[in-house]
Image (cartoon, rainbow, N blue to C red; front, side, top):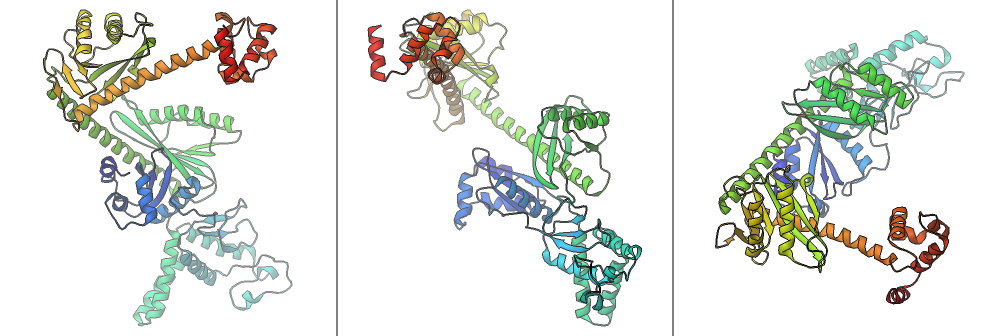
Length: 610
């Protein structure tokens, strides 16, 4: 479901090319798409449109979040989109079946007389691969031009007695029968490699001259042909940052400001970008190189896979140390490099750009949250007439079953949001077996504010209940020394708010954010108390069932639970395994074994007798 938060997030997407990824409520990727303009493309999903295709409408209805990866060109976005779809198999994407989606240009430099060809499969055979290319027509056009100007062989088998038809057509120099020396043949190969590497060679200028001459002679068809040939070569020469060679490497990008750093880690496996992770690190005067070193040591210390190469945005002092460490973990040589040029440097730039984008977005969302919660807390302060902003709110709740396993919970909201590290739970003693919520609340607030002096002082105390519960605890809280902390009660029936010192309750609108915040606080306290109570009740019920087995007392019962943890594990145990538990013997073990295998009616009879 598209929420206001998603719409606002999309409004801050960049207008650059890239890939966007839609997630469902469980964080699973359900759709991957590419865009020339990320913001405009993703906006088409969040605006209302009754004419959407059924599949798009279904995807949008399950969407809970969206993220993106920036790229330099649309071609890179297209290649990355295909890679991510193959990796994650999103539910609403058309899944490609194999790796034959895009072609490569292959130069078999490992052979004495190399060949030039198009292939859809990369192999570890020593050949040079260029691509993948999304424009198959450009690949065919470029190969045609290159073969016309550089007559390389196309045959697989050179064990022949006479030249083939390609020689008679002028497309091959017949190295199979020794009509060209290796050195001369290699000149052709070197020029092809230079062109595919993006360098300028005489062929390009030659085609430009022919195009201009044809245009001057008004031979526009010829001029258009040369133009198309040049455009095909330019497309092939366009640098591909996503895939250039086989290999596993991680690419690290870093962006930081005065207080926060974002590390972007790209994972390239088999030459393809398979994913990325973002890490946010607090900055306290740290240098960039120090952050990179600390990240590497912490992240790769627990990593299950070490790549063959780690690319860094800048040099660090511990480079050789990390090289030795990675090499020892992987069992083969690992490189840690700072590329200065080429496609590896382009990968670093892409990681850096994405890290900066994520850092900017994190800052924006943090500011939005701060503005939202700060405004909400100000509204709550005004509505209840509180003396200060309720930055720290504490709420209590009681849970029991007819007085048994009586427990209390305390939950804490900091800045309007749950702070689960500050949650506390109490097992109450003074009311065990005698249900009395007033006495229970009195005990827990006395323990919290009378004994725990080291805990931070709250700005607002909330109790679950009306005027009666509020009066029961206010005096006790004051006796503990908290005379300047306001206390309120939230009654469930009408959601009335009772404020200390006021006779009349405050009725907040059910749609007001202030009441919803108090309800969230109260409901969280109730959930936390119920969870703890159920844990104790389950433990009591499981323990009591063994109390009805002859020969099992508190010591043996405790030993059995320590050994088997669960009732199912105890049922699966043999008599000998039960007898091996400390304090157990063979007779008692047999009694436990037999009792656990009785049906429900038989167990009830045993319990009734005992």
